[in-house]
Length: 270
Image (cartoon, rainbow, N blue to C red; front, side, top):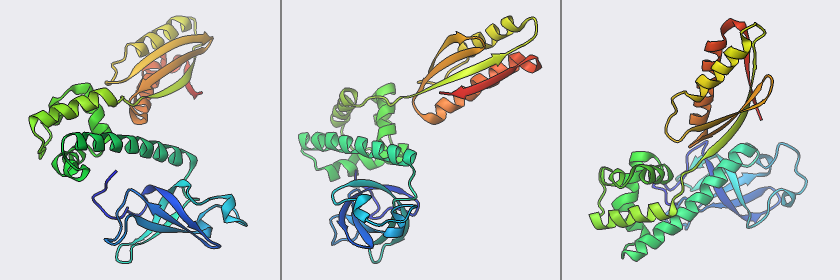
C-alpha cells in the first residue's frame, strides 16, 4: 500500500524483502515506502547482532535473499535514507499479525488498482481523490471498508474531502460489497464456577443465564455450553481482540456480582 511518508517511524513494524546478505549486515527493501527520490523503495540494514538473541555463526541459517520478514525500526536517518532494523526484537505474535495485515493490504491494493484502471484513473489518482480522505477519517482502509460493508454506502458519501463522483462512489461501494469480508476473531474460555452453599446450583444457573443475556456490542456473539461441574465453556466471536476481551471481562464481572462471596469464578483460556 502507498504511504504518504517516504520512511517509517521508529518502533514501527514493517514488512521487508531481503536483497543482500553479507558477513555482518543484511540489506532489505521496504516496499511500502518510497525512500529518497532516486530510490524505488526505501532500504535498510540489519546488523548481525539484531538478527537473533543467540550467537549467529551463519547468517544464511536465519535469513536468506528473497525472503520477506517483519522487522522493527530502530533508527531513521531521512537525509541519508538510512534505516537500522531489527529481527530479534519482533516476537511471534507481532510477526504473525503484521504479516497477515500486510498480505491483506496487498490483496486490497490489487483490487483498488483494478478499480482505478477500470475507471480511467491511476492508483495515485484514486488515493488523491478518495483513499487518503478515507484513511484520514478511519485510520486505515480495512477498518473503513468493513464499516462500509456493515453500514452501507452512506459511510462513503459522508467522508469529508471525498472527491469521487456519485457514480464512482457507487462503483467503489459495489467493489467493497463483493470483495471485502468482515474480520472476526474467536476466543474460547472456560468458566469454573464453584458455590459450596445449599443454593449453589441456582446461583450458578443464574450467573450463566445473566451472562448470556448481557448486552453485546455490534459484531459480538457468545455461545455457552456445560462441560461438567463446575465448568462452563464460552465460545466468543468478535470483530477484534480488544472488543472480545472487553466482553469477556463483562461476563466475568457479571458472574462475580451474582455469586458474590458465596463462591468463586475463575476464567481459564483454552
